[in-house]
Image 1 (cartoon, rainbow, N blue to C red):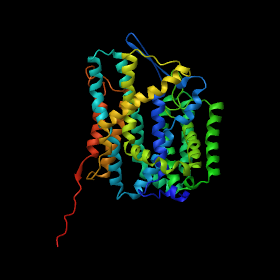
Image 2 (cartoon, helix red, strand yellow):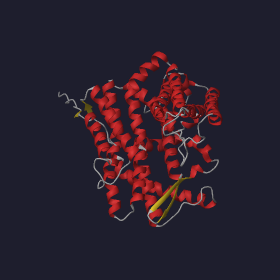
Image 3 (cartoon, one colour):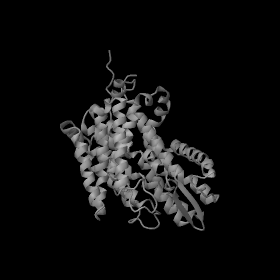
Image 4 (cartoon, helix red, strand yellow):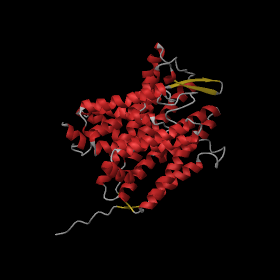
Length: 429
C-alpha cells in the first residue's frame, strides 16, 4: 500500500486505516493506563486510593500513555472526512450528536440506581462515593468532544481560509491562558479545555487536507522531535509538571484543566506515528480494528465500571491490597488484574454494545439550530456529571446526578426527533 493510499483511505471500505489504528491504539492505551495505575487498599469502612504512575521517574510513561491528544486528532480528521461526505450539515450534526449520546444512556440509567443498590448491600458510603465518581469522571471527554463537533463546520471554514494559522493562533491563545492561570487567575485555565482540544482537533484537518498527511518519514520524525522537545523545555524551565496526567496531591495538573503543553505533546505523538504509518496500516490488524471500531465508545464508557467491579470483589470482598508499584509482586499481579478487568468488560459489552452498534436508518427532522442547542444541553449535562459524579438518589434529587442526567437526556430528546427512512416501493412490470 502506498503513502497516498494510506492518506486518502483507499481501502475497500473507503476508510483511512491509519486513523482507525490511531483510534484503536488510543482507546487501548486509555484502558490499560486506567486499569494499571490504581493503588488500592481497604481498611474499616474506607478505601484508600493512589496512583502507580506517581512512582518516582514513572512520569515519563505518561508522555506515551496520555493519548487524549491522539483521540482529538483522529476525531478531527474523521469529522472532516464525514462532513465532506454528508448530504448536509444538518444531517451531519444529527448523526454525530446521536452517535455520541446513545451509548451514554444505558450508563446513566445503570448508575442512577447502582449507588443505592450498593448501599443496600451494606457497602460503606465512602467506597460507594469513590466508585460513583470513577464511573462518571470520564464523561468530561464526551462533553468537550460534543463542543468540538458543534464547532467543526466553523473550524473547517477557518481551516480552508487561513490554514495553519488557525492552530498557531489557538496555540498562542492557549499560552496566554496558561500565563493568566499561573498568575493567580486559576479559573481562566478552563478556557483551554476548549482552546487546546480544538487546536489538536484542527491538526486532524491538516492530516486530511494539508502537509501533515503527506510528510516523509524524516519530516514526520522532525515534527515529533520538535513537539517532544518543546514539551521537555516547558517542563524543565516552565511551571508545568512532568506528568501528563493529574497526580495525587500535585498543585498543578496538565489535564484538569489542560495546559498548552498537551498541544506540543500532540505534535510529538502525531509526528512519531506518521513516521511509521505504512507499518501501522498492516492488514494483520484488520480483524482487531474491525471489532474495536464499532465499539469504541462502549469500551471507553464501560472500562471504568469494569474496574469498579473487579476492585469491589477483590479489594472490598477479599481484602486484596495493591502491591508496592514497581515491586516484583506488583509486576506479577498486573497481568492477572488486567485479565480480570478485561473479562468483566467483555461481559458488560455483551449487554451494552448494542446501543452503539445498532444501524442508524432514520432521517432527522430537527433543524440545525435545534441540533446545536441539543448538543450544548447534552455537553453541559455530561460536564456536570463528570464534575459531580453519580450519587445515591436517596440523598438528594436536586443536588445529586438527576439534574445533570435530565439535561443530557433533554439534549438527546431534542436531537432525536427523527422519522423512519422511507424505502421506495418496487416498480412493477
